[in-house]
Image 1 (tube, one colour):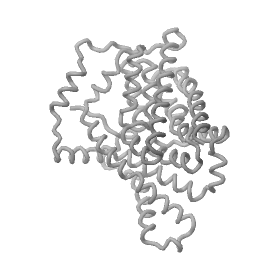
Image 2 (image 1 turned 90 degrees about the vertical axis):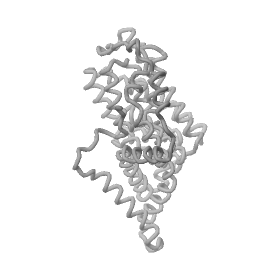
Image 3 (image 1 turned 180 degrees about the vertical axis):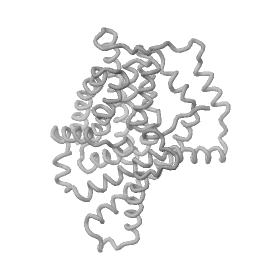
Image 4 (image 1 turned 30 degrees about the vertical axis):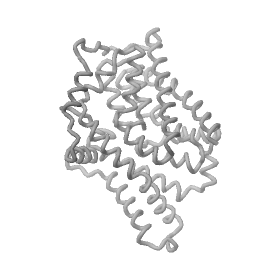
Length: 350
């Protein structure tokens, strides 16, 4: 049975040391242990802030990581063909809605989602479906959603998910209409779904084969942990970046530059464009913007702009489609929506 891999990019070649993982893990481990082993009053102020921040984030996120690993293990047993084939006919509202749902529930980070999205285009998905899949995906995986709930709360997380889905649907619909009217080139790889494919039958077969025994649940957890190596890597990087900000950026400066204002929203969008941080790393940073800068709209914009304006996304779309117009239409259709949503969240959340 083929299954997808929850990874940030391609899997690391066997035998190659994942330096980013081990360095970030070592830093988090040292800072965590120093909180308990060293007298806090004897620490330099910056080390005190960093060790305290690591303990706070780890204690907040651990249950989300465990729950996320279970979800990753479960999704790893679902055939990738099932996820891709149920997208439906390109250019239709139903197909667009299915692509958005697939983006919401596909447990990959932003770079892994990008790879899948480009493959979807090669397999015939419409431009609107690919855009909806990418925009709905960067932080909405199940594992990151439960972590975000732990960091900012259930209701704000649900609002973030709802807004990202609406933006994905609107952007995808507009893109498909532009293709329909000849303003953008159509996908030359477009194909119709096989008439004899019945995803309901495959779902029933998967359900019938499922056995909810302690052994299988333990196996799911272990598979999820193994499949979440890249996710954990970027989560650790995000923790390190977040505590560095806490230690070396004055709260007044943080509030000024990333606060709930038009300037703060603009600075957030610029930071999200420049920082090449995977969605797992962006989640703790977004939570810090949410709490320390009291700017929920900026946190939402930080999560969303990573896919809307990221140069990796744009260049991958350009190389896959061979068209700069198709690459640039992504930020043109999504960025105005993100700005409006961010301003409204800041207005009502302040």
